Image (tube, rainbow, N blue to C red; front, side, top):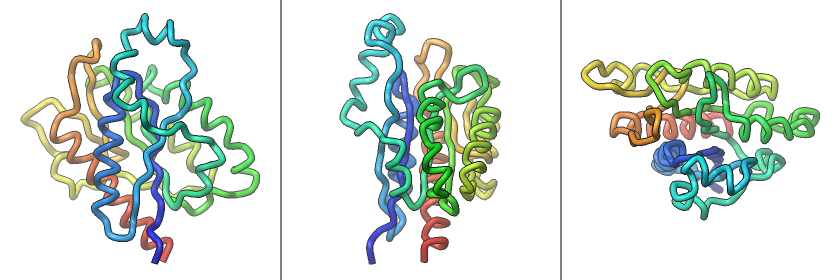
Length: 206
């Protein structure tokens, strides 16, 4: 039987969301019958602006990842979206991408598919939960079945270190200058999210 396709669609500026996307894809691929496809949404900033923001070098790490077309979402059995936080909301690049899915909405192409979200913030209280839950609004309009990370994942209960991770979806902390990289706990939760989405999508598809 053909594997189900789970798209991991992300935007990353400094590489933190990309690292989380790789972990999520690894989790998906651990589940027999599921296969992850990594895609990135188009960039809206100019090369000059990216260079001024110090993002040019970091972006080389995922330059090989194909750029997604909004209509491509219809081919997936589940979609896991990744976005950095911008003032408690998804980034403009992701919003612009989703705003091009009107035709999919009119045709009901995403109804019944699993949808899930992960994120990155600069600080502990920088909007991880609001970014994910506000993103869910768009998924609900598309009729998607939302999946998060349950508290059976012990990493959500860690109190002995600074860490991201929410029941709404995996998350990481990047620090204001982007110097902090995803921790092992954050990556473990990301892999768990990928596995959970794959498991539920398989149940829905078969």
